[in-house]
Image 1 (cartoon, rainbow, N blue to C red):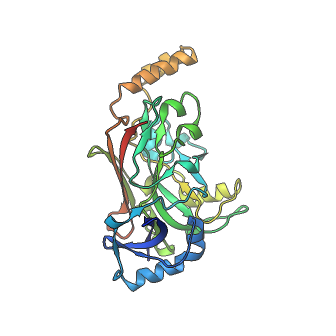
Image 2 (spheres, rainbow, N blue to C red):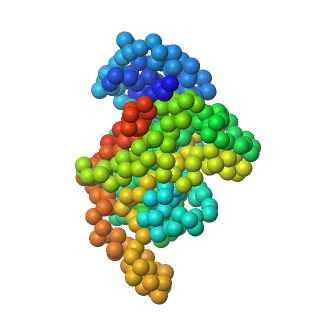
Image 3 (cartoon, rainbow, N blue to C red):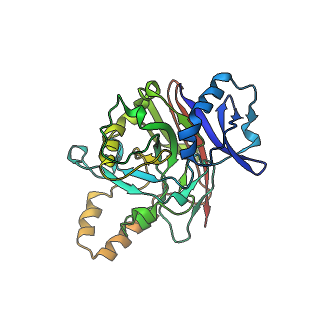
Length: 319
């Protein structure tokens, strides 16, 4: 049964606790990192959850931290929802590869953090993503399937892949454009899952609104490369450790979309610098990009509430 576990700060100390019924019951074990919790604390968390919520501390009395600690890897998939492929100008029938990149772990931040827009950034974008938290070491090629997925994935989490498009796109700097500090609000908690829970994975609904107006709404069933094939592919390339984060991509509805055909035709006739100046000017007139004062609300859950990864609320502030 899924169990929600938050990392928190209270009276200068940090720890982990089981979240239920608007409160949190602290764990007694010492788990300094996400990997430590995954390796050593899952049993305690499930036992506390089974015992009930008699010793709950109201969530309003504690500060929730990012449940992914900064020692863990932050790996991402790009253009991995069919709806996002289409709005990016990519025909899903012609998509032949899994786009993989990294974000700096120093961008990880609590779920309710203020997101700082650097002064030189004007095209700031949001990307709600469903994160997989690894549950075991991967040190060589593995064959991951839906049937054995729970051997590799210990938890699910919300993360928002905040992106400076005017750095990412003209400079081809995915890592830099997506890694400024606060560009990775994550949480509010980890949802520990088992094999039965993961049979409901594709029913998870991702929703994001800006200033109360919905921008993104899709089911995880819309993922182009699903977790088993992605983890199988990545196991041939790199090592993973318990607690590492794989963000699986964002649905359609982001601010940055493929420009119209006329703009693309004209841009091909221009020098590279002029092309990006034109596209940046077009982006500056797009009200969907985030501005200081904007408020983002993001949540992931199944419609029946069986799996509930919580809600993020973020304010955009000027750097």
